[in-house]
Image (cartoon, rainbow, N blue to C red):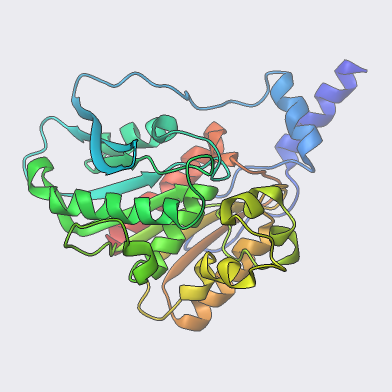
Length: 320
């Protein structure tokens, strides 16, 4: 039985679940996915899914600045980390990463693989912590991310950061926060509790499977959303609207590249499908990658990660 399962998974992996894109503007085809999450988990359990190194060693040629406090609120110290190549001599574009974890967990070092990869490519990379649900509900996390961006801008000279070339990057809940501040960062609500006199505007956004509309029936029914917003939809629909990035989409928003798997059971693919439509209507430059047969956190798979980085590189070269 085990032998048959291995053959089945290998066959699906080789053939994929559909035809690859023939778009000439996309020279790298998406990696073949799986029919469902059960088969993907089986492939992982059998050692047939190659994953990236989750905790890579910081190479000698990368300088790291760790545990920098950017905000103190109550007894909570919010910190950020910065990485850059030691031989970097001129102001460089910067990527600020926001970790995921359903607004409940996660840590800023979760994005270390990306932080190091892009520092090697000549970017300055930063990653910020924010208050999780157990510390404070919405809008605390959004306010913290906004303040973290402001701190980085205000201290840019110290690290060689080009403040006119900043991209905001996030996955899952981090993707939600990247979109929320990237589109709605001027909202006074998101600028409370931070006395740094610069704006939080960014030039580009990279989103991995982040929720965009928290007012959908699926979103309002999840405990993660209810805990994050500290309310049920029937009691306070306004806060669900306020916390939805789609509320703030307008024609002057930053160009956005986003990635979504079609078998994502945590953030439905319809969220990114809708984002694509709303950005098109607003005239915002966008690049949507809808990966068939891949789940949430799909970019821990090496082939998906390589695919994502290929298109992020192209996107940032054009817009950053």
